[in-house]
Image (cartoon, rainbow, N blue to C red; front, side, top):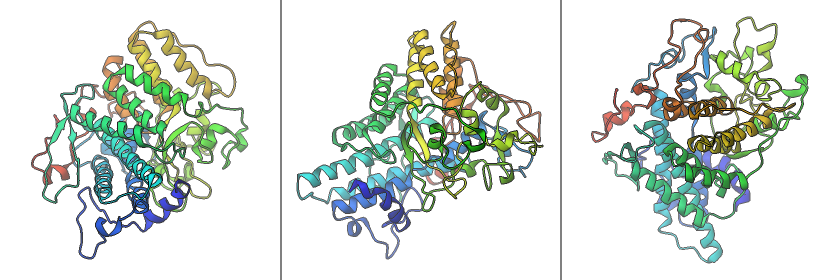
Length: 495
């Protein structure tokens, strides 16, 4: 059954058996309910692929994080989009904030509906029982991931179990149900329970566009890193590395052919969606079918100068990418940036170049092996094992060199180590949705915050180049829509 999942994802997501327009799905007259639509294990599988996987989306937080931090610049061809977000005007009516909240609660609600429907189904034999258990394990892994995403942006303090977390939606809610926020400890316990179930019941799946045992451990590694539990973060990051593809290495390339689709370079091929490379989990975005265009977060038509890029790469990030023989520069920046025709100094973001003849649309890479190495480096800094941290950082940098060897870093103290971890995460994981969370959780201890260039805001050179790392805007506000509809929800400080 797993072999036909990709077909089901396209077919079922287009003609899903349930309709959902918000996180609290209302049954309309004539709608096919779960009781009618989900009666067998095969029905559960269809609902999982078409409705649960189809609900997972991280593009809103990726876009807002890239604009609010130091990943992007406002280009000269931008007619006025994102100006407020770029200038730190993060408010409760922000559309990306609302979408982040809504998207993940939609996914959580669909998982809860699947679990409720599963209670009515009795598998026919041991084989079907194992498939049934694995479906539930996949769904609960997705629920754990969605809660982790919500916590990453909305909790007031990731490292404090007593701090205010998000709402705990642990069932199918009633239409008039207004849930309060709960403590981080309650959300973390729920995530851990889901992942423990997944570890015990997940079949040995290998398709990286679906839940695998490696994804379960990768979620754990990221969660424990965010919580500051580096003992467990190390354990699970190392397990992922041991059981996943190796870091995707760079190879020498010819500029004239590097951008071709597909490229012969293994690292570029990973971003063109013609090879898994080191990807642990990606959200499937087929060239024809469901899912938005991730590159439209920054550009309009294509990922080159003629495509009207509203947001370009920030100048300081471009400088960091310009290390000798580093494959990430030509992989993340379109070559028209270097052409004589580029008279606007726009650095065109090309991390998501499109696939085949479909521009802008690529799978969204959610977990990669390089993140696990950087988690190990961060844990080593925490333990004051600075030489070990430097070795992990060098391993990532060496994998990205198509010629020569990256220098081995040397850190005078832990703060310098944290600074280099943040620097490498900024380069390696740019435009993947990490920078905002990385700064809010490590900025204070590393002594850094936003690092913009005076030329990044084409229209207003007086836009502040940084933002105090203690500012309340390093936590997302609870969206207006939730506040208006839920009198029990508590707003984050400062909003």
